[in-house]
Image 1 (cartoon, helix red, strand yellow):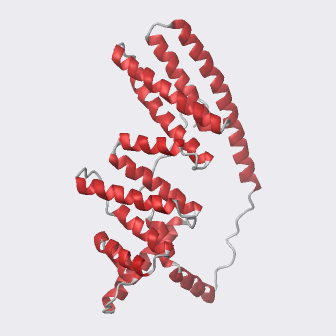
Image 2 (tube, one colour):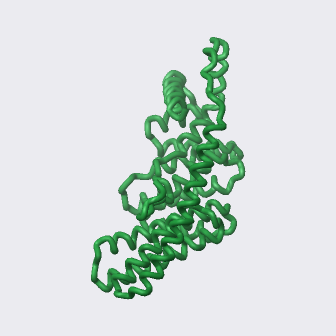
Image 3 (cartoon, one colour):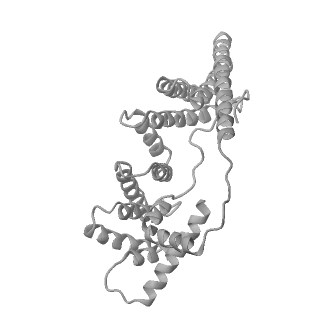
Length: 310
């Protein structure tokens, strides 16, 4: 579905450029902007969109398109002050979209992913601050807060696992792993306080308790190791049960879905109507499509050392 739309978007941009070349327009138009975007002249597109926004400040599609263009202006791997300023400007524009009730659920997902990508470009510390702010913000939805806590739990698990997997005996490294595991357990517990049956939170709690057991073993605290191992085993049982329920619910949902029929081929008249509809909505579609800056991995990958969830 998305691939077919990208084709429509390409045709829209091509048509915009062709029209712009054939007509000597003295005023900035959407076609001009789309042409500039197609040519990756984002600086000109930003300037013209700012002018269009002054003339039509309530046009939300223009606002989305302007935010998307600012995201496209960011140079990957560029740590210069100019590029850092572009990143922060894009973050501000995307956050303004999140605060607008007109933003659709699908577009919100795109905006969320883009913001994470922007903070990733600023560095791990900035990214962590973003997740902490989101996790602690009671104005965020419970699901968004849980997601943030599990992302943080995942990062701290990775911090600890990277050290314990080497079987290090270095006291400083062990202390760092211990700090990461302790911090991660706090994040997973806070996520579970909001959503007691969240599978990702239980998954990370299981692994983080396993990390705590490893660290206690490295420190020679056998009784504490056994205690953490027991807690990890109990958490694994809960995680496994939740995973089975989630899989059963997914299978039930798939079984209840009706078969999709291809249906008769559309008539010429219907095809024309569809073309006109897409043309009329090209700005809205282009704005939404261009919000998607880069693909992101799942925010809270479930990864159990003892096996259970894929």
